[in-house]
Length: 170
Image (tube, rainbow, N blue to C red; front, side, top):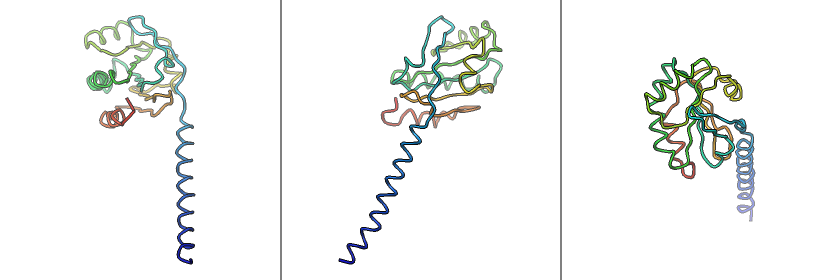
């Protein structure tokens, strides 16, 4: 009888710790910030509302034609978009206000960018996304509309692909 009583104490402690870990994880998940309610107008005049993309993993990248890191990322962005878009991934690239419409159109056209390209002429989009000033700045939004990550500088595409390849992600 003493042996079984001694087993209950560690089992009870493990159960309480397990419940605490699950509770903490759920609390942290629920506490994740929600992406701003935004509408984007692409260079070709399409309107995209973030709330219409619920159910998809969305990446919003702020970039500039004068940014070497941004230019270096474009082939990886194209590859990632082509690979994951059919599975429920959306990518919106937002050129900063200091780029002219002509610069952005020329760049997007010459590279044949397959994803939506937006020009943030007023800077309102950048302000709505945590006042993004550094380029590139990338936000990843999960299927429920919560911000999963914010990256200043180059995206780690191997980590991004691991995230997107996770079961039920996209």
